[in-house]
Every structure is written in C-alpha cells, then in structure tokens.
Length: 420
Image 1 (cartoon, rainbow, N blue to C red):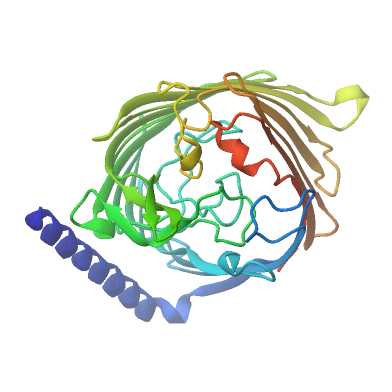
Image 2 (image 1 turned 180 degrees about the horizontal axis):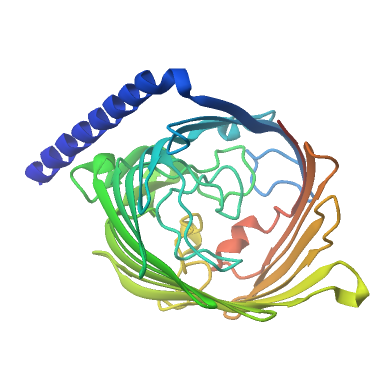
C-alpha cells in the first residue's frame, strides 16, 4: 500500500510539472501572435419552495443567488493551439454552503490532422439518455448546484484523442480526485442526515491523489452513434456511512476503487431517436449491471406550424433491485435511485427567433409509491438575454424510498442569464 501511494504521488507531481512547463513555454513563445476572446454569462436565480421546510435548520420558502461564469480563450498557431480558462462562482443570499466557486475548465489543447492533445482541467460528458446519465463517469457531481446531478466539477486530466477511420480513441490520465459537494444544514433539497465533508476515507492509500485511467472508443456507422469505455479508478459515487458523533448521527463519505465498463448507443431512424446506456461496475463491495433505455419520436412541423413536438419514453433498470437505505438517500449512485422506473415526457421546440423550448417529464418508481414531475422551459429575449423556468414536484409516501426525505421540497425556479 505504501508503494502504491508513493508511486501515485510521484506520477502526479511529474504530470503537474509537465503541464505547467508546457503551458508556460507555449504561452511565452506565441504570446505576440495569439488571438484573445472573452465570453461568458452572469445569472440571477430565484427559487421558491411551495412548502415549509421539513427540518428545523433549513431555510424556508425563497432563495436568491447570483452566478458568474466567464470564459477566457486564447488561440495561436492558426488555431491549432489554444488555452481556455472558465471559472465559476455562485453567491447565495440565504445558503452559505451554496456560495461556492470552481474552475470548470483550464486546459491547453493542441490539434493535429489525426490527433488532439489536452492538458489541464476539463469537463467530459458521455451519454445519450435524457432522464439519467449512467455512462457519464469522468467528472464529479456538484451536488449543491441542483438536484438533477447534471452540474459537474472540473477534473484534472491528460487526454490524447486519436482519430482513425474505424473510430475515435480517447486515452485519459486523471491525476487527482474531487470529492462530491453536498448541501449543508440550512440547505433545501437534502436528506435528514447531514454529510460530513471533513472526514473522508478512501480504499486507496493514495486517497484523493490516485491516478485514474480511462479508455473510450466512439464511432458513427450510418444512423448509429456508438461509444464504449473502460474506467479504472476512484468511484465518483461515495458510500455514505451513518456515524454517531456526540448526540447526532451524520453521514461520512467513503470512496472505494472501481472498474466500470460502459456502452452508449444512439440510432437516428427517421423521426425516431433510439437511446441506450448500460454499465457494469465492479468494486470490492458489489458488482452490478444497470441500464437506461428508451426513445424519442418527433412530430416535425406539428399542427401545420414551425414547432416540433417530441414524445419521450425511457426505462431504468438496476440489477441491485429495490435495495436502498433511507439513510443513504444522498449517494445518488447510478441505478440506486432508479432501479425499476419509467419516465415519460415531451420536448417542444417552437423554432422561433427566441429559441423557445419546453421539456416536460414524469417519472414513477414501479416498486415504491414515489414520483417526480418536471418542467424546464427556456426563451431568449435577444442575443444576450435568456430566461429559464424550472418546476420540480417530488412525491413519496414510502419511507424506504430516497425521495421520501425530499417530499416537502417542491419548488419553482426562475433564472435570468446575460451573455457577453
């Protein structure tokens, strides 16, 4: 175990030194010919919870926050070399734990004819389904941003992408690990037990400096887009262990090692879009399969208008079955929350000058009395201003179900974003 830790730390130091040296050299050598661009957005967000808080420490109905996410982009060598810096920060007026910042991206990229190299901090997304992203494994979830798990923390990486006639092969070295963020004591959208973020344990002796590895192959064959991968490293989903501390019980995070194999497939057949994701995860605690599959059918020019209306249906299955623990509701591990669930929805795109879109969805657990309903609507008012409306209704009367702890947290959220 000591040798593994020493090796991991040595590799991490060498990689970080190499990245810093390479970026510094390239910037100094090309600064005079570099092109520079600044874009980004500033957002104002207002949340309103319809019910009083379930736990006494939580804030009540309204919650206001402001976010800023600029993007600085440098390119040189006819665009073959570039550097992107994308920080993020949110200030919440009532929830100190939700006031936080992160570097979403800080990466150098070199592009050649049949390969691409990236070094730094980056976000990578894998997956094709709408209501759950089983295949997505590289980046850690930013659990205090939203309930859906789609907001991710930046991940340190070295990435070599090889472009071949038979597909694209991506090789990843991931030095360093990001622990998941969790809501605090006065936050809404949390369970009964708080998660301790100060006492975290790992299976690996290298702890958060373990060198993770991933290999992914992706290819397009006619109407089919296929991706498959192998990931070896620290599990992004923590095991939350109830622990007695004084008179209170808290949840402590433990991150084990895992090997995960994933497959994602999308087929575009006329107006039909078929989607499939599946993973097999192997850890020292459990081995399991999980699958998310479904389709989207689009009525183009519905009702003799410019609008497109899509109908969505997805089914989620997890080999672990019902399982679950009401004290472990925050783990959000793939499949644990959706072991036998059906999701139906509709996507409406008005195809107007304001890019107006609405996504509606309803999900139900076939084993428990639990359901979710969501509406996500967006509309642009000009080239620089976008408004978003989100509605989430959460229902559960079964104490073993993980939604039971969020049954009072139905909310509506209005966001305004100014792009520059």
